[in-house]
Image (tube, rainbow, N blue to C red; front, side, top):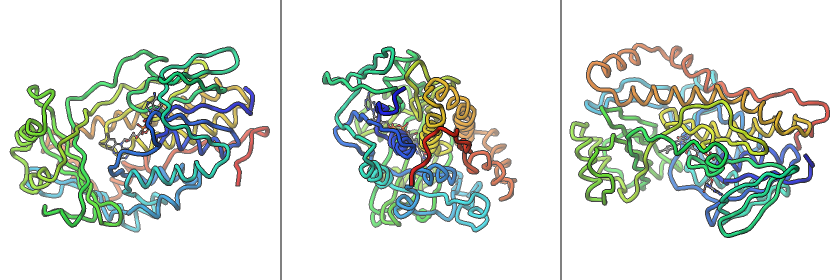
Amino acid sequence: MDRNDPIIIVGGGLGGLTTALALAHRGRPVRVLEGAPEFGAIGFGIQFGPNVFHALDRIGVSAAVLEKADAPPAVLMIDALNGREVTRVATGAPEFRARFKYPYIIIHRIDLHNALLDACRRDPLITLVGDAMVARFDESGDGITVKTEDGRSFQGAFLIGADGVRSRMRAQMLADGDPVPNGFMAFRTIVPMSEVTADVQRDLVALWGGPGFHIVHYPLRHGTLFNIVAVFRRSAHSERGDVAAYRAELEQAYRNAHPTMKALLAMLDLRRRQAVGDRDPIRHWHKGRVVLLGDAAHPTLQSLAQGACMAIEDGCCLADCIAESNGDYEAAFRRFESARSVRTARVTLESRYIWEVYHADGIAREVYWQMLGERSEADTFQCLAWLYDGFRLPDKVAPNAVPLRG
Ligand SMILES: Cc1cc2nc3c(=O)[nH]c(=O)nc-3n(C[C@H](O)[C@H](O)[C@H](O)COP(=O)(O)OP(=O)(O)OC[C@H]3O[C@@H](n4cnc5c(N)ncnc54)[C@H](O)[C@@H]3O)c2cc1C
């Protein structure tokens, strides 16, 4: 592997940009190919556990992210039928910060993306190429060539597929089909805080869990915006509904919900909805000169709010593995997989379990509520420690590896 050949990253999302920064910090030139005309995010909110800051510190963007973020006093789970609190994580308590070192944050995706993009644009080792939808890759003995849909070719030492949940790089490498839908749909909306009429707590993250549906809401941009995600089990009848059909379907799914939830539903933008799904975890995300990360490798349900955190941790870990591999990229990819596969699989599998808890019905619901209600703060912190304590990035740097810059 020639150290001067650029590494090609397909996908300029959160995982791709983090990987670019982490590799550039290790002295490696990278070229990021993004399919959308502009590098940017879909404009909704995102939550980050404290674990993500171990990685963001590493690429030097924590301060820029914190400036735009808010730290909610708590993450609440509320019974969506009667409005009672089921459990809470006191994310704003001094004990939380003392235990996990970093805050729990909520941030507008656009602000987060811009923090990463600004850092990428300042780095001479990173080339960003927009409007470059990659159609396929071809390996030769000493490198990789990718072809875009509009016929351009780019060459590099190897390829990192960070092209998200419907990854074409994964399809070419593994041919294992699409992610598996779990039967739920999600609507996402942001409204100005001044337009929120529902009787809700506005300064924290609230998750209302009900049989077959849930809503998450939280403020953004220092309380000026309000982010809502509404999820429900799809009925078999309106596969391709218009707004009126979606409204009818939502009203049916939420018919027994607390009045506050119905007030939240009235605020939703129903023009676009998204199917929810994930994949069974696998151990290997590489073949030859191609390796996958983030949602391309291990898409998860959003119940732990950790998909993007995992993509960001992946990026830093992969860059370290490459920097320490002494040119043996296959060894780097194997080390990356073994460092990351169990942690990301645990996120996927625990997210499925929590999804079941949120949406449980009947006696199962009462059992889960009782279990959650019995937890002390110390128990909750202990349950989250494997995740929020962060991922220990390899700290042993081989003698001939390029040192971190700056
Ligand atoms: C409703 C919802 C709520 C969520 N909330 C949270 C949360 O609170 N916290 C959290 O950590 N995670 C959350 N997630 C998960 C998170 O959004 C994803 O895990 C994360 O965006 C994955 O990052 P990625 O870089 O792997 O992929 P993406 O962010 O999807 O980026 C992929 C990029 O690749 C580009 N691309 C795709 N194909 C090609 C191609 N062929 N050629 C070139 N470019 C291509 C795309 O345009 C895109 O820019 C949520 C997800 C959903 C659906």
